[in-house]
Image (cartoon, rainbow, N blue to C red; front, side, top):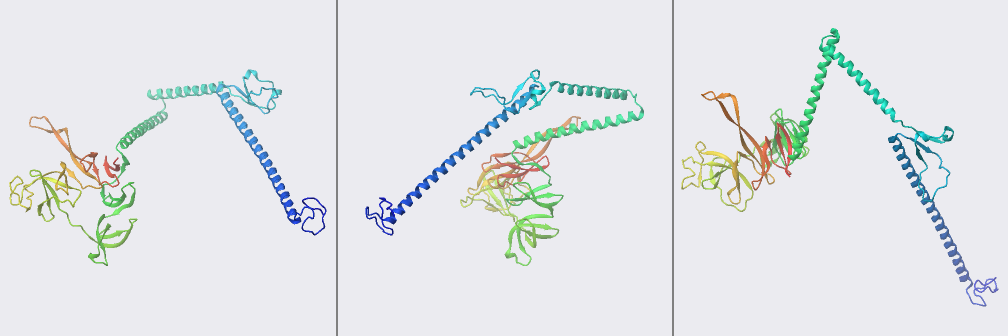
Length: 473
C-alpha cells in the first residue's frame, strides 16, 4: 500500500504515513473529492458545449425559415406582378446551378416574357401560370354584345307595345310588367328618401346629444324615481329605465305610483314609501326587480301649497292648500330654488298688492288676481332668483329644471276673412320645453314637445311625437 500524498510504501491498516505523516483516510477523501470535482467540471463543460451546439442549430433553423419566408414573399409578389402585366411566370423547383457573386441577391425564380419561353423538354420541373390579357377583352365584348341584343329586343317590344302592335295577350303581359316596374321604381325611390331622411335625422340627433334616439312610442312618460319612469301606452302603465330607455315592466297596470302605503295586516302608523302598482281597484307593492308582491293599502300624499311672486314689492308669498297666504322671509337654514308664479295679487278683502299696507296673513281672491308666468326664488333669501319668463316651470332635479315657453307663429288661412273680404292672419300657439340650470342658463333649447325631470344628466324628451333620452353635456 502506498501513501496517497508522498507515494511511500506503508503498512496496510496504518492511519498515518511514516514518512510524511499524512492522514491516510483524509488524503484518500481529499483525492476522491478532487476527482469528483474534476468530473463535475468536465460534465458542465460537456453540457455547455451541447447547449451551444443546440443553440447554433436553432439559430440556423430560424435563419433558414426566414430565408424561406423571404423567398415565398418574393415569389408571391412576382406572381401578382405577372398577373397584372399579363406575362408568364416560371417557378423553378431547383435553384439553377450557376456561379454567383457573394453579393448577388437574385431569387430562385424568374419572370420571362412569353416570347422567351424555352422548349417543353427543358420545362419538365417547372410550373407555369399564364395570363392572357385578351381573355378579359373577349369576355367584355360578349357582355356588351348581349346587352345590346337585349336592349334591341326590349326596345322593339316596347315600341310595338306603345303602337299597340302586339297580340292581345302580349299587350296585357307588357302592361302588367310596366305596372310592376313603376311600383318597383317608386318603392326604390321611397326607400332612398327614407334612408336620406334617416341619415339626416341621425345627424340632427347626434348634434342634439341624444343618448337614445327619439324612437320610443308612448302616449306619455311620467317621473317616478331616479332610476325609472312610468311609460303609458294604450291607457296602461309600465316601467322604463331612465338611462337606457329599456322597458323593464310592460304597460299592463292601471297606474303606477311612488307613494306611501302599508300592508293589509298592518296599521297606518307602519306605513312605508315606495313604488305601488294598481291593478283594477287593488294596489300592490313591488320588489327590487319591480315584480308585483302582496296587496297593500295606499295613502295619497297631501296637496302642497304654491308660491307666488308679487313684483310690485318684490315679495314671495306661500299659499297653503287651505288657502292661507303668508309672506316668505329670509331663512339661512334652507337651501335650493322653488317655483313661483307672477301674480297681480288682490286679497279677498279687496286689498291690492299696490296698496301701502298689506296684511301679514290673508287669502287670495283668484277671481280678481291675474296670474301670469313662472320663475324661481331662493329659499335662503326669500327673493326671486330666476325671472318669471316661463309659461310653465317644474321643480329642480340634480341642478336642472324643465321649463316651457309658448311660441307664437303667424300664419294665414283662407277660411277666415274680415268684413271687406280680406284674408285674416292668425297667430298659432305652441308650447315647447327646454332645460335650465340654477343660474337660469338654458342648457337645452326650448324646442321639444315634452321633457321630463333630469336624472344622471339625462332626461326623456319628445320630438315629432316620439320619445328619446337627451344627455346634458
